[in-house]
Length: 570
Image (cartoon, rainbow, N blue to C red):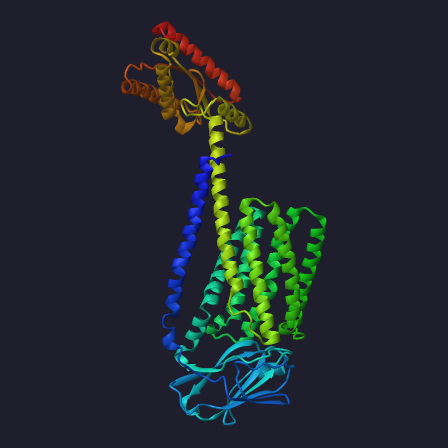
């Protein structure tokens, strides 16, 4: 079976639009990225301090250690860790800063056994979290050749199993380098947060008119959480000089809350499958997830058990939820329409990206190994999904617009006279039925009858008769349509219902009507149009529109009878 031409053209235009959008993104994204990274090679100058360390972890001592390869078992809370080495005798950095990355640990930096920087001990004494992220320590040239000692005290159990690179950067470039190294997560995180926030605000107002926007609200909240988590996890938000514990709190809260809008979103797909067992599993999983989230937030707020400790349990819940989510979406792929499949494929992509980041995070934290090096995959997947979502909405909106246009055309055809393009008898009768229920008692019904139509049809043909009918419709519409309804009742009969019963106004319109007839006869050669009419207005004694219409029709026939006697018309 051949595809209709209209559908083929529409499909081709949609494919072209998608290809153009993808090509535009692929063309401009590297150029935007180059704006941030073009000077990276010029500012990357740094002193690496990753080797020649003597490390003490509890009672274990290690000599001449390279931080790039050194791994150890996850340590317990309060374990004393010391790193010691001699600084280089010279470096080409005048105003230096030591960049350290800590993970849930209090920190002391000493130069020749003199403390120059401390962080986190006051919070540890109060049993609060100290957070994770980058710290920048002022590091002038006078420290060259001195002994540096870094003391770490984990504030949580099994907080880390390796050390991040330790480097000295120029102070003026330290934050710029951080943003350049994490530019992809920065782009994606900012986009997701801003997009989600704007969509959320718009959707909240849209929900007052329809509940169908609840799924869009879920996506926008998930986008906010994912964007915020990305900015925190990759330390981009640290440029705002927020304390590390505040950044970590935002990171964990956004991670813990992100699955909840997805669970709400998932209900529609579960319900669409129509199987009771899926609904029961959904309710059990949702109840457990919501309860666990509330409990974990409560434990952290009371400093009973902190987020870093409960994270592994949340990850287990995430794995269960993702597994169920992927299963439900795959089941829906079998029975979905083409427009829905693009949407479902996007959701599967998001689920796969979340799984990727969970695996990467777990290996890095608990095993001290980096097996997956691409950063910000969840954010990238969500951006791709939003693009697919916009494309899906575009296709769906295009289809709805075409359906609405077709529907409007059919409605117009049902209520429009084909020859004159004014309202027909059906529309007029429905309009009069509505008038019965209204309280408007100020209107006038005018009935018209086109004279000599049969004579014109018999003498000059129906083509000339059609011109006469259309000319009459134009004159009646021009005169009375600005004040109410004009319709063709059939054949040579017309009607106008105007919203006034003022006799002066009616007299003025009658005079205008006669003038318009004369003008039309001058415009069209040999037209000789003549129209008989009669009217009746609503009054306190008679306000039934059907009776008033009948009175106006009777007046019109009386006028027509007189015109026949005087002018020999038919």
